[in-house]
Length: 441
Ligand code: UDX
Image (cartoon, rainbow, N blue to C red):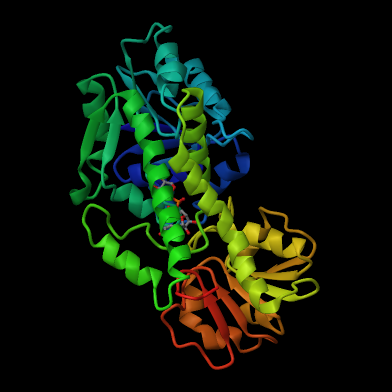
């Protein structure tokens, strides 16, 4: 098949790399620098395994990127993979979706061969695909030649290529079996053999499923964090032990049940806010989603409070923060709990040194307060500091071990926000505090 993907961000690029194994994929991207990097086989995003595959697919000429004004030619599928950021009031900003549809409809003469399907992959509120795509296609002379579906992605940053190839299910919201079969035929040759699970449903149910999926995963995490708060008050209780026992119930599952610093990233905060905003416009209250976000928003303050309970004053103190990305395996700091921890420490007058293995990539994208230094040199971060907070569980920390990490600290107070060392031998002279262990606060 010939496939056009509008938007070469995380979803568009990872989906394009995956589909180009069997199809001819063209990425449309407005950022000229990104277009040049992709066509040179250099990934604009940090994602495990993408560099090698991207180079291979570009060399095989199965994948290329171009600016919107370049010639495309006829295609079978057009995937919309543009951003749908949260507006300040939590509602979903659909400007990029609108522009993508404008682009497609302005070029439809060129794009149409016998038949074409527009596949919305961006996370959009229920009703959007029908209103912004299907109803607009109806007003063209090609309405009988263009199908419109909603097909959510469930990619996690850091494992996006693996998730793209091995989805638990492929949801196809559509209006008829022909649309379903055509989209299924696009995925069948590229998905892993044991990932050939396709669900046909209607547009609105598929759109809502994406929000519900992310909101439930966020709720699971906040539930684990709330249970960790209880466990901390019970001598001997250990939240990992508790959630392991609970998760063995096959109705619950142990996944996304790790207590820690809370969730960040470009999706959970945005999608829980988006679902809440949608529900409110429908005059439906969302106390569970609200509670999940409330519990999550308290995690950074809790970690700083744990440190203050040992150091008392933070003003004028040198404090190390380990990890800046919202999770290991990515250079993405959007809604990262570490950003909030740093802001609170600076508010208390501390001098903050941040370590992250991808600090050089991260520094290109964000501005930190002047009191904050960022480095990928862990020894430099830890030298002579008065205390430390681990916020992102990069493998390097567990690989090095707590003894090595703390050896150059002036004052060995270590708050472990991700329970990396919760079951390790704590070196003598280290005041180790973590979430979810009885009497840890
Ligand atoms: C998420 C969804 O998992 C994915 O299906 C969707 O398509 C996009 O949003 P992502 O945000 O990239 O993916 O990463 P994820 O691995 O889900 O982690 C999100 C956040 O939750 C991270 O900050 C992580 O540290 C945190 N988390 C995750 C926990 O605190 N505890 C857990 O048990 C799991």
